[in-house]
Image 1: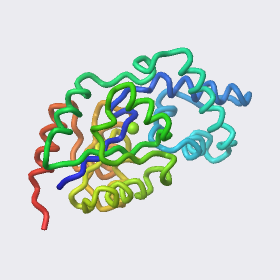
Image 2 (image 1 turned 90 degrees about the horizontal axis):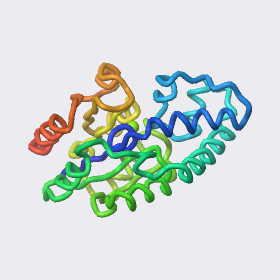
Image 3 (image 1 turned 120 degrees about the horizontal axis):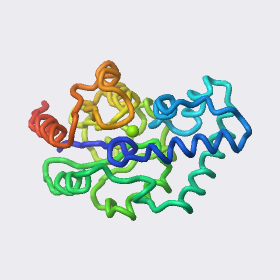
Length: 225
Ligand SMILES: [Mg+2]
C-alpha cells in the first residue's frame, strides 16, 4: 500500500490572495510596516503561523502577536468572502482527488500548515472528508519542514516511509519528505519556483495535473522490498 500526502495551499487550492491580504492586515493591526512583496509574502506559505512570521520579520517579530492578528484577519475575510473565493480549488483538482481516492493501491492524506479548523471548513465545503485517511495540521505537529507530520501520517496508516510520497508546492514540503525518508513530488503551479523545489529534494516537478498523474502512476508502480 502506498500513501500520497498532499499539501493544501498552493497545491490543491489557490489561497494566495487571501493569504497576502491577511498578512497585510496582521501587520497593519499591530501598526507595523509590512515588509512584504508578494513574492516574499508567498515564500512563507506552508510554514505554521509563528514560523511564517519569524521568517517574514527575519526573527524580529513579534511573531506570536502577528500570528494572532493573522488569525483575526482570516476571521474577517471569512465574513467577507465565500470559501470558493477565499480558497478556490485549482481546475481539475476535484476530479483528480476523486479518481485517486477510488484506487485500491493507495491511501491519501493531508499535511498542511493550516489549522485543523481551517482544514475542516475546507473539507466540508468541498466534500473531501472521505478522501483522506490521515490529516495532519499545524495543530497536530511542528511546522514543516520538520518530519513530524509525515511520521504521524505513516503511523496512522501503517505505511512505510519509502512507500509514501509528499505532493506539494514549496521547499518545506520537499524537505519534510526528505527528512522523513519519503519520496517528494513538486507541483509547478504553486508558490515556490521549480528550481527551488528540485534543490530541496523534489524527485520531479509536475507542471500540471496530467503530469502529476503520470508521476504518481510511476511512484505507485515502484515495488519496494
Ligand atoms: Mg503549499
